[in-house]
Length: 216
Image (cartoon, rainbow, N blue to C red; front, top):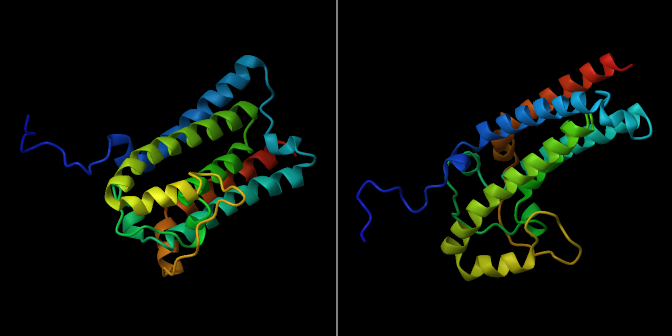
């Protein structure tokens, strides 16, 4: 049967992909809400996890390092794309990227999201950390599963070889792609991450300051 003339284009992503930035915000909000709710119902003290990692200073440093590392990784990865591609509603593939962080992970942007989720989750009690980390990771995988068929169809054998060489998310020893000569623009990477990335850093700093004030 022929598709109707008003059918969605083949490259149109599902709604949750097109609205992914709003969904990320909702995911954090729900994870924190239900995390604190579970902690209250289970009688778990609402003490930030970072305070149980040896010392408050060490724990706060680990949390801050995770958030900053996630932001830096996203800027590095975005530098090899462009702000327009990062913010595009549908998947884009003008060229297979095998430079910078893309040599070690096929999805450095999403790995950056997971690192930030861990750092932010450390400012809450254990149920919050678990819900934030698991929900953000799960949503990132949902986005990856939208992109992979698109990239496979657009890039063919080149992407198939790349997928067989480089891990999907977590870098692994010996699984590294040969360096490609592709330009990067730090300015464009910062432009792509200026809104969401800096917002995450500000939210984390505010939460950490509140946690330290509430639990001296």
